[in-house]
Image 1 (cartoon, one colour):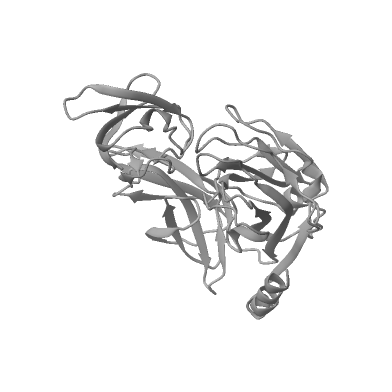
Image 2: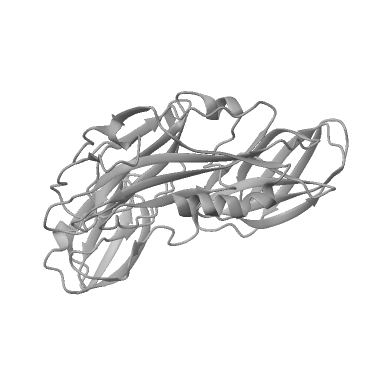
Length: 367
């Protein structure tokens, strides 16, 4: 806690006058929400209200690596952010551990208006053997949502987390002691109103369109793209027409990445002040968009798949002659590997959706 407060104090000079921080604050309402296919649920979810070595736990996840729990949901954090501000970012801190070294992140998602969001912040990192805080999000991360102060202050604002087994065998001992949230905001109001922002596929590119109203002293717009909804890079720069009437803009991503892309609009005023749009997503498959990794896989380790939309995917494994030796199904980023318990050498795989459409092929080395 002291280290976190020291960090915030060091950052304060950069936020004076414009940016503000509220928190960390503790949740006051706790529950569990089922995830289809889960193996365990959380006991005593209210124990995460304070850092006091009194835990919420889920017992032993009895299935194999990648098996997961239900959501543990914490809401009603008691924020009192004033009106007329811009929400810049949200940081969630979870104090957790597993003395048995068999638990990892499965999902970490924001809760807005009582609904669990789609933007994923789980890193898949293992729980440490003793209690420590893990941070999710940052001072500029909106978790794929657009926010008002009323959204943050609402009793149904919060976070949902789930855990998974990371190692086969033995007993999982995952536990959470405390969940807290920090919100970053400022009083800046840019002289522009964004009416809409959308993305559309166009042959081998993506069209990005937006409409503004009441532009005054605006410098330019930057279309930014990300593959994880956290780390964004510029795609195109568009000079503002600086008109105080409804104005339409269009940009083009001529080299979209394969799979899910996330786009946001960075709006920059003449004096350098910045405002961001909500994040929108677009799926654009080019070639072998979905694959398995690591390509060198050790029996008992986690085998992952690129599945950002949590589709139901079917994975077929075959030998060098093309004979299918195993089949498994997943609707997450973890591939069940029980059928590979005795596999050795090179395995060929093909991935399809529920309808049988081929989405990806490849090979991995099992040892």
